[in-house]
Length: 407
Ligand code: GLV
Ligand code: MN
Ligand code: MN
Image (cartoon, rainbow, N blue to C red; front, side, top):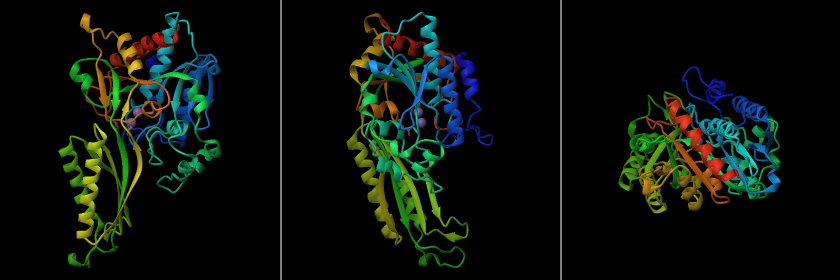
């Protein structure tokens, strides 16, 4: 099956006809369909399929027990109304790159696998990269069991309903210890490649980033009869905090976003009793991130005091700065023709987006390839990459894998 055919087959799964975006959330029917698609692709290529205890799906060529395996892949889940490329481009390109290597007559000197990491986006349970975090020991079973979706369903119950054992989750050092290199291809989530005029780039680093929950608690009351001076309206402090986030991010050259909100009782004619907003903030270095989030929290406390509101701030997740393995990064750049003497360069760029490759980089050498995104738009149905660039990405991935895995 060609890249184009695989892409077309995957395209309708979990797509909302209303928004045109994807709703492929962990352990839902759409997720199961994506997993079935992955397994069918793997089996059609004679790869051995397994799902590890943390819900990550692997397709193996060769015996993993031999060690020093080369692994590529990405994820198939999405953010709410996400685009088609974030995640699936890496998985489809991995199968296509394997086909290209076989067409070249490449001989595999090491075990090789394609992986589909579970719950990368954290759209349902609020924590990103759950599958890789569990495997790498960055999330304990107890912490994972406490994760709950918007309907009150725990991650454990959702896994169980999908036919997996939630008590088996946890660190998987033996599995990770068998991997010598992990390379994730991903659509770029910015416009650096568009501006440099390149189809493909190599990742240098991921900004430190995290998610914080701000609970503003006031007093529910009648929207028509309660005098303005008598109100304790948490929406006011929340709204002021959103503006403070923008200001603090601008001052530090960082980003800060309140993209999700829950309101109680959520009635048009009721002053809210609770406004819960989730902050996502990222910066080039830890000090800037601390300054931004510290500044936002300080402002939020002032606004809460002003309106008689109680405020709780909880850090729900955090990922420190990731510097991808320098030797592997340089090897990728060399394979892809970075040769300053001959004027050939492949761009090496950082990103503010989180990835499983970033989580795994603490345990094994990891690297990433980015494919040009002409608008930079991501986490939106408008996310796009041209087919020519996608195919250039497949060839680049095949070149890299050939360099890493073949005799
Ligand atoms: C994942 O895509 C993230 O960066 O939030
Ligand atoms: Mn994403
Ligand atoms: Mn992604």
